[in-house]
Each structure stands twice: as structure tokens, then as C-alpha cells.
Image (cartoon, rainbow, N blue to C red; front, side, top):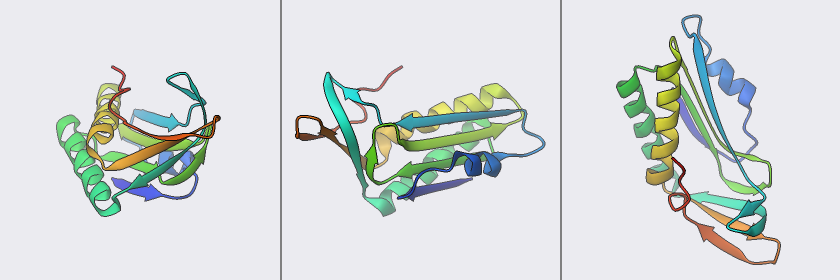
Length: 142
């Protein structure tokens, strides 16, 4: 189990290796990427910032909760900070468990809780030259 705020591209192969275990029959992966359009505005990139000590603590608590709720011992979360371009991975959550339901449920729990609880902010940069802070919870999908 590991969490990290990183300023370099996320290495999905390395994250998969971290949750790899002969007992796991399922691996669940969520990769959040910077999209080119938001609320009808063309996005050129995103700037992520965080209150790092609090964000790291909160993400660690979230994965501990997921582990306890779903019995998943293999969870890795990395979230990028800094300037990202369209198409860049901003977050990766990888879970491994003997059964798929637990791996998927733990991964989804981590995504949803991180979006609402971790003090990580994103500022979108638009093609028209404007920039705007965007709430992670206003566009939350079910």
C-alpha cells in the first residue's frame, strides 16, 4: 500500500508491479487524464496544486479505509502535481485482490473519496487565454 504526490509522469507499469501478487486474481486500474474540453471550453492543460502534507495524510487514510472495507491489501495511488497537458495522466489508482468485486469496489471508493476529501486543486488553462479553478465535486459522475 502506497500513496504519492508526484511531479513526473505516472509509470503505470511500475504501479501494476507494486500490486502484483500470485494470490491476486483481479487488478483494477483507474487512470484520470486531462481532457480537451470542459463545460464547452477548449482546455489546453491543467495546473494541479495541493496542500501536500494534508493531502498525503488524507489519501493514506482513504486507502486504509478501502483496505478495511473491502479486504484489499494491494493499493497504490499516485496523483500528479504541476502543469499537465491534454492527454496526460493526472491520477492512477491500482488495486489487486483475489476477487474482482473487491478490487473494483476498493478502487472506486478511493477515486470518489479522494475527489471530495483530498486538498488537491486544479486550474484549467483554456484556448481563449483564460484560466479557472475547477471543483472536483461539481462534475462528479455516478
